[in-house]
Image (cartoon, rainbow over all chains, first blue to last red):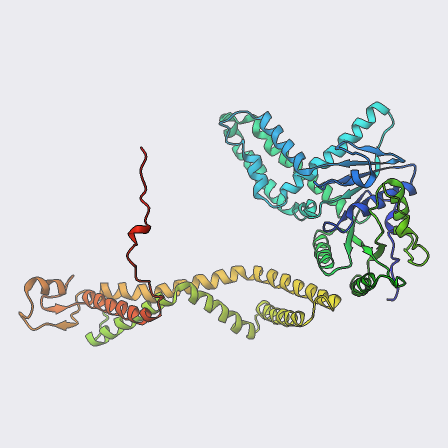
Length: 347
Length: 210
C-alpha cells in the first residue's frame, strides 16, 4: 500500500455532507486560528450556505481572532456574511440550567430538590452531556430566532467547534450506554415510586425523570450523529514538539474509543528555516521540528498531516485569516510562499 | 449410637495441631492466603490448559516485554517507535483487563470455597472436640493436690473432679501460642519512643474566656 494522503484539509472542505467539525488540541497550539481558518475556507467555498463557528472555551478568543466582539448569540462576521460566530461558556449555561431548576422548585423541604445536582455530580460525563445539550439547544434557539424576523430560514450547513483545551466536552460520548442503563433504572423507579412521590407532594418533580429521559434521547441522537464519519469529523491541532505530540496521540486514542472520525492533524507553528542562514536558532529548532515531523509521518500515515508555518505576527482579522487559511488547502511551500510570513498586517 | 474415641494423648496432640494451624492462619491473614491461592491457582490452571488463564498469563508476559522495550527506547529520539509500543502496551492492558473481568466470578468462587475450607478446618474440629470429648479426661491430678475450687475449675465443664479437660487444655495452648507469637513478633516491631518530660517553660497556658 503505497499511496499517501494529501497533506491538506481539502477532503474536509470538499466533503459535502459534513455537519459538525471539531477542532481540538492542547492550549497554545493554534486551535482558534485553525478553527477560524477552517470556517473561513468553508464559508469561501460555499458562499450560498451559512456556517457557524462556536467557541466553547471559557477563555474566549474568537473575538480577538476576528477583531470583532462576539457574544453568545450568533453574529455574522464583518466581511464574510455567511459565517457567524458565537462564544458560549458551557459552565455558565450549566449554572443557568441549575438556577432555572432552583427557581422552578422553591420548596425548601423537597427531598428531590438537590437531586439534579447530585446526579450531575455523581456520574462522570453527565455534566458534560448536560452542558453540551445546553449549547446545542442554544444553537437551535438561534435558528428559530433568526427565522422569525428575517422570514428567510437560516440553517447552518456546517457548525465548527473550537473546543476547550481539555476537550472534555466530548467525554460524554463514551457514556450513552451507562446513561441508558441508568435511565432505564430511573424509569422503573419512577414507575414504582411515582404514586408514593405524588403522595409526598412531589408530584411536579416527576418531570426530573422526564428531563433525564429527554436527555438520554438527545445524547443518543447526538452520539449517533457524532460517530457518523459522514456528518462529523475532528481536526487535531498540535505543534511539532514532544509533549504536544504525546497529548495529541492520547486525544486521538480517546476519540477513537468514542468511535469518532479523526483523519486530519494540523501541525502548526513550523519554522521552515532551511534557507534562513542568518538565524541559527531557527535552523536548529527547525531541525528538531523536522525530527518530530518525520516521526509523525511514520506514525500517522493514514491521516492528513497538514503543515502550517509560524508567521511573524498573530493572525488576526478576516483578511489575514483568508490569507493564512489558503494553505490548509494547498500545501505551504516555504520557497514560493515565504512572503506570507511577513505579509500579515498587524491589526 | 456412633462411638468415636481417641487416646487422651492423641486428642491432646490433635487439638494442639488444630489450634496451631488456626493461629498460623490468623497470623498470616485469611485474605493473604486467599490471594496467594488465587495466584497459584491461576498459574497451575493456566499450565493445565485453562484457556482464559493461559491467555492472560501470555498477554501479561507480553505486556511486560513491551513495557521493557518501551523503557529502553528514548521517547523523544524515537517518538514513532515509542508511541507504537505505547499503543501496543495499552491495547494489551485493555485486553488483560477484559479477560480479568470475565474471570471475576471464577475468582469469587475460588475465594469463597477456600474461605469455607479454612473455616471448616479450624472452627469445626474445635467445636466438635469440645462437644464430643466434653467428658474426656486428659490429665489426672494427684488427689488433694490443689484446693477444691481450683480443681473444680480445672474440671470445667463436665470432667470429674481431679481431672483436667479439653477446655482448660485449649485455653492454655491458646495462651502459650499467643505468647509465642508475641515473642517472635516483638523484635521486629517498630520501637515506640520513650516519652520525654514536657519542658514547662515551653508550654503556653490556655486561658478560658467565659
